[in-house]
Amino acid sequence: MHRICTAGSQNPSPRPFSSRSLKSKLDKSRSSSPAPSLHPVRQSMRQEAATSSLVLTQDAGSRKGHLRPPPLPEEDEDEDTDAMPPPSCTTTILLRREGEQVATDGEEPPQLVPPLNFAMVDHGVYRSGFPDASNLPFLESLRLRSVLYLCPEPYPEANQEFLRARGIRLFQFGIDGSKEPFVNIPEDRIREALKVVLDTRNHPVLIHCKRGKHRTGCVVGCLRKLQRWCLTSIFDEYQRFAAAKARVSDLRFMELFDISTLKHLPASFSC
Image 1 (spheres, rainbow, N blue to C red):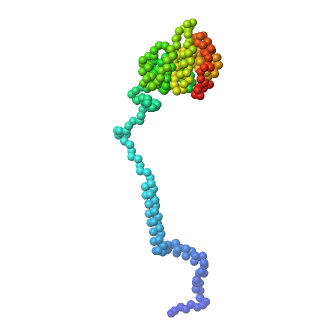
Image 2 (image 1 turned 120 degrees about the vertical axis):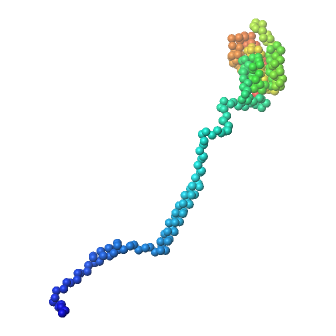
Image 3 (image 1 turned 180 degrees about the vertical axis):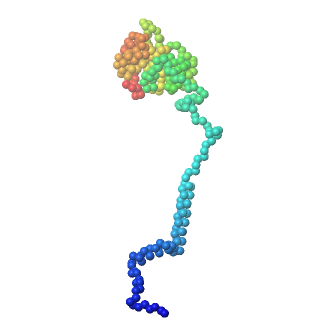
């Protein structure tokens, strides 16, 4: 027989439904279920973008590699090269004027030794003692046009040959070089010598006697009078070359020398 439950019989009632329990069940289902896959079109687009970025990166790296300079080859220390060594610092090159010889490595340059008591009187005018063979290269460097010789003795043949080879004209006015009290200075020869010096066509000119002291000093002293030098300056210059052998007769001659008959100084002379 079947037992029929009546309304008054005891039956367990169902549990009430809550929103909290529903939320927890949904969270557990999401965590346990696998993530949904992306849309196939989107996934392929992402893969293509990643591939293209990789290709661009590799291309940029290859370009940078082409821009880099190639590494230099390592030098072999034991390799024997045929390179020329640098020129020696001791090699001397002398620049000479046109027409003069140039010294080479195997030749020594000529020594330029001025004559005794050499000095410059004015522009294009020089004075000295008698030049010997060792002074000829120095005289060549002066580019002389004429030589004014104040001694009565004949000019040496070697010196004449030197003058002829270079087209230098020789003027000789022989003045006796006797010592005091027998000194006789011919005024006419001093005057003729001054005319040669004042002619600029003879420049550069060298005035010399034996020592470059007394006869040369008188000619230069008379030239200074033409340049309006005072007697004190004229005597000081004379004594600077004559030193202890200065002659009173020379000083008296320069003091009394008359310059009125001579031409005025050329413009090339300094006053």
